[in-house]
Image (cartoon, rainbow, N blue to C red; front, side, top):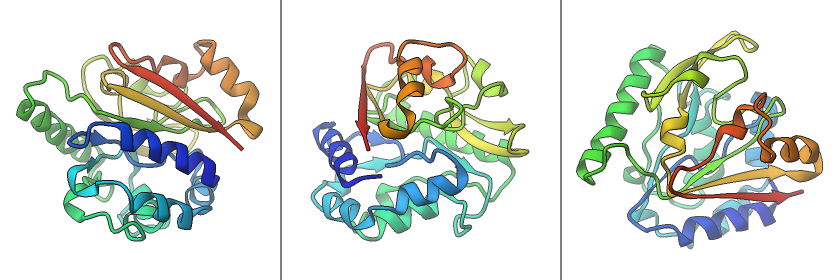
Length: 225
């Protein structure tokens, strides 16, 4: 991710409500590309991140691989190395998904945590101030992959989703939770995904990301190189 995209994302975060809850600061596109993408500008991320009010921020994760938090494929580990540690984000501001336990149990626990936040704020469904999403080459976002069962989930906010093409389980936010946010922002490498991005924005139903449409919020696309 280029420093320009990091800066745009940071600006969006800074303009969100300070007591709100965010998704993970970066969505991975694919396992290996995701690692490179997240770690390509750690200095920029840390420099920008130090200016944000992390003590008044609560960070959630939009999805997670079902691996331990210290595994090389862990989204939490990538975010920790690229942003949390360099930017001195306090642990109390981070709520990770437990990818190391049974997927169904982990999803239910995370949904319970999110629902508790909703109750504390008098909301029926928790409303994030800002959710940052990426775009996979197959049009997936979070871990909402084409053809997977989670695409049809209409009530649960967090689920364990089996992804056949990866032969693996993922934990993921669902559309009911994502589309309830005040602001959803996609961070996309336009030089590599220009045609795909255009089709998603036009609403092509074969791509899950096209179904991201906040019901009472704002949708933004940040296109970088």
